[in-house]
Length: 410
Image 1 (cartoon, rainbow, N blue to C red):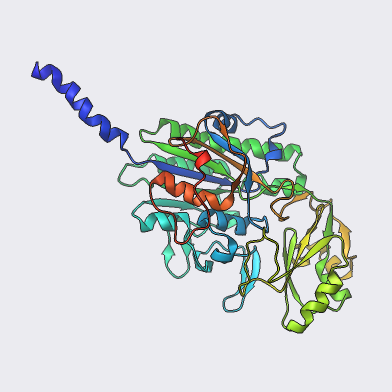
Image 2 (cartoon, rainbow, N blue to C red; image 1 turned 30 degrees about the vertical axis):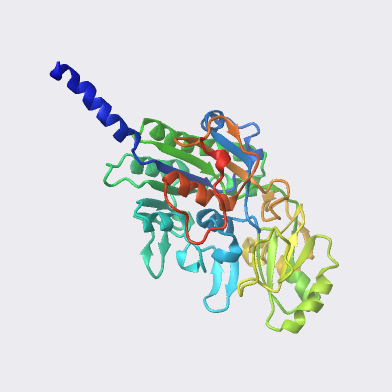
């Protein structure tokens, strides 16, 4: 009898240990995935996540709604006024020019997800993720990769990297895996949201998700999978030639322009008010002043924030002529103030977060995630504390977001 009962007793003793296996969390971020891109696309993996998990098509980024500021906000759970990355290109009075850097040293406060996890003894992986590396301190995660855009693998190959991490032995496997993917952003900019090429890019994204999804389902340990983006996308038609406008009005300011905003830095404070008055006559953009920014901005009034910000109104956008194709750069000096731009760009982002098309997607499924639930809206700052909650650790110090309870199983 003792021999017959032993397996039963052993199984009963093992059950609590199996149930207590620590959860792994995987976060995949695909650049520029707007909800409108689902139209006409075949996305079985994401469709399944929507049926079996929790999701929202109102994942709201910070302002400006562009990549690096959004990614830093998602990763830290802090608004730009606290983490310090206020746009994709800005000036710092001590460090100089910031330009699309993922270097963790640019943070003025807050912690990335992987930094907070590692501090609390949780192994993490950051694949081309924001803050994966620090110039002064080196790798900020157990597995850290920070490749230049042109050196990053294709999204399907990046999915293979995530799968390989999930297949590591228990003693080596990270419990937090963060991965940035190129996604449909670049194609949508050039071809438009509804283009066949963009549809193909969305289906490519779905195929990458499917690879990771299969690995999650076969894992012998609990896993929560989260798929999200840094911002949405919408149709644009005309470009605002900021340098030409400043020259025409003899405004002495250095414009740093990306997406739909231009940050104007003045050496002489006395020049700010007259410039704001002249620029206010343009209907193509709003003039925002430091110290009186709208509530949605969350930029604060630190030294990196310029005296004036020009914020384009749809369907206008702003780019520095220095970033234009070589054949068009001369237009920055000799062209008109407002130019038709559909030949070079068909869609963009960067508008205030409440504008149509700026919100992105967030889909989640697996262990600890609610089943078949649509979440009306979720702020970018809320993902960090939600991921930390799924890991069973404290969020970074400090953090502005709160746990998105609607996303989680009760």
